[in-house]
Length: 306
Ligand code: HEC
Ligand code: HEC
Image 1 (cartoon, rainbow, N blue to C red):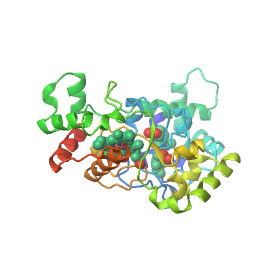
Image 2 (cartoon, helix red, strand yellow; image 1 turned 180 degrees about the horizontal axis):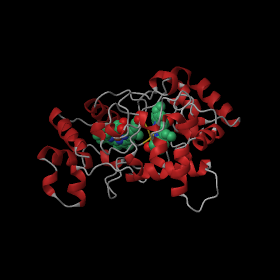
Image 3 (cartoon, rainbow, N blue to C red; image 1 turned 90 degrees about the vertical axis):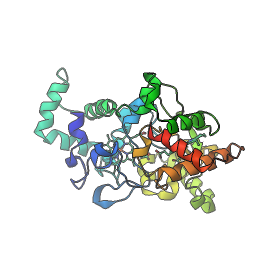
Image 4 (spheres, rainbow, N blue to C red; image 1 turned 180 degrees about the vertical axis):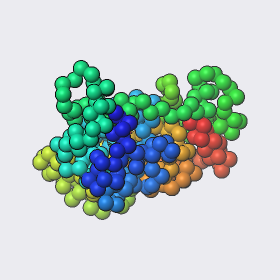
């Protein structure tokens, strides 16, 4: 039932967008765009994350700013986001699902003990089960780390792994622990991406966010329709000034297949993303790092094995 829901365009305002329009199975459940495009051709403000890493990385908060702490809440959000699937509210979602006979059958099979009608809880539940069932194929690094297969990584990737853990310090945030490796620390960091554009009017922008949060406005709908506010990142959730411009560390699983990069999709290629991370992370940590062209290629070979 979750798979059916995931692939159903009738659950969008204009009847053309389904979850799989943006989380495209052939693109590791991303869309290859810098920012997502939803109903009526509306653009969002954020890059579509890959879904198999949700389960692989044991994510406990969702979206680039971690605004949801439960997956069964997160999976319903896109349905009523005005620039994603655009339904008016969950009541409209429920009507659409209840009107379609195939769901009646799938529902009866999936929840034999449930009362008569499908509820939004069932819909969320089915979508969660589906998202959690998505698995990235076994990677060369999986074979290397989990099966102790030393030949799984080519010599370049081996050098890249040493840099990733050592001199380049990538593994401080993109953790290698876990089975499969999580490649994230589940924490938020300043990104250096996108903040320049809003620095000029930061006070007005943060003030507006605080006022609206007091009125209980929906964060997800707001950030998807306001590019400036979206760049405030974690601040939108906590309203703590220390969180301005912080974003969740993304898992790097399958990262060579999920271009473009970063929360706003503003970095086009893996080479650019590596350059940016090498430069910015080392600058931020106060230990500027010089990597040769060769070493960057090694890092890339390792990322391609993830
Ligand atoms: C219009 C494109 C689009 C559609 C349609 C869409 N998504 Fe997404 N999805 C995104 C974007 C963009 C994000 C990141 C948003 C953010 O972080 O603010 C996202 C994030 C997510 C996340 C959080 C992943 C993480 O790593 O935190 C989940 C789960 C998810 N989507 C599931 C779904 C499901 C289920 C559907 C269908 C009901 C769906 N999406 C429909 C674009 C889309
Ligand atoms: C201080 C924590 C931290 C360190 C250290 C770090 N990263 Fe990141 N990385 C992040 C965060 C946070 C993002 C998301 C930034 C954004 O979206 O604006 C990110 C994004 C990325 C991305 C883009 C992923 C995507 O799906 O968009 C790549 C590739 C990447 N990092 C590689 C590296 C490499 C290579 C290193 C080592 C040179 C490194 N990172 C070091 C926290 C870190």
